Image (tube, rainbow, N blue to C red; front, side, top):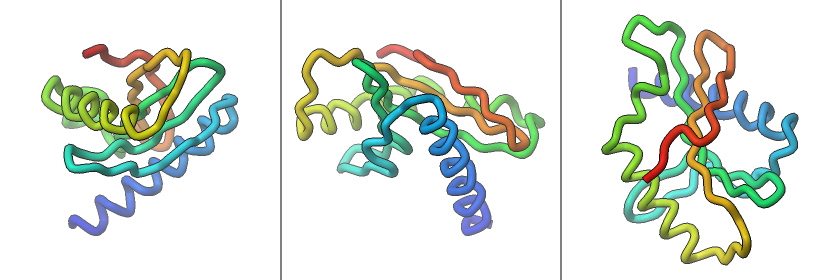
Length: 116
């Protein structure tokens, strides 16, 4: 089951990757990992640096995909992003945390999904 979830997750991330490119985002990194955690996609659009969590579901029977990004997950993403920012110098960038929901193949991109 774990392998199947990984395949579904990767497919959702690929779908969001192309969605972002089609919406003028430059993909800087995918599956960025450090000692704290992982960020699915890091992208830039104009002066906006976006840290994007992708949640892929085939049904909303257990809630909307974005609901899986709870406060604990948000803090983990923010701490992971902080390390990324220390490693990579970005000047004059607005930082946004986004969630890309893929529900039954359709993307709902939530910019500024949360603040920390």
